[in-house]
Length: 260
Image 1: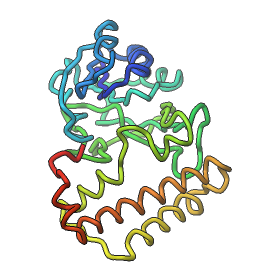
Image 2: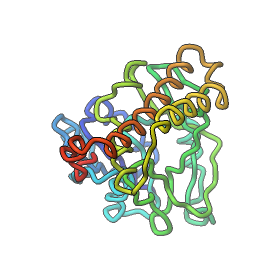
Image 3: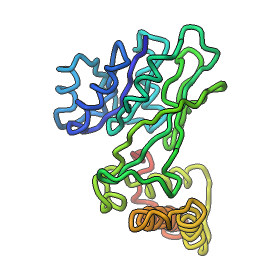
């Protein structure tokens, strides 16, 4: 038996299909909602999901909120914009979770822009552990880029579908995903410091890694756009960190208790 857990914030356009996907393999679904103002909670409850309301704590902390509420040891954690493929459903159903020596299972993730599956820029296979035993492991307690800390995971030969962005423009301006500001605040709080060359060097390195090392040049316009968005995000992250160091007025007005 498996419990599906999803963290949400205003996901009324996604939550029904996500829950339907989980219900193919899960005996219960828990939604940890960050005080949505749309119909996310209503839709989830109408589909039989249990809703827990929790102001957003940061990625790893939020994804662990639902664990004590699960009635099953095995948890399948997905984002609202993710779906199980038929192959993933079959692979999960074939697992002997009662007797396995593994504490987690990883899936390949197909990241999409619109309906386009982007295979370059490190976007595929993009393995991520999503099925795990909550008695043995959990997500790392971090505010950004959390991952399941399984000690004996196994990679499954199947995919999740991730509808990352509706279009190319969202790579630069998806609501609620101001990664550069969040990252800059976290780095500043941790004592990380930048110099005048940091924004340029980190931005250039991000572009080179995505476009050349991870073969974004094979992805046409999508590959170039992903590489550019990565470069811009990295540039801004260090430019904002440098601004905190150089401009007392900006620093004074910034609320570091509201990273999210």
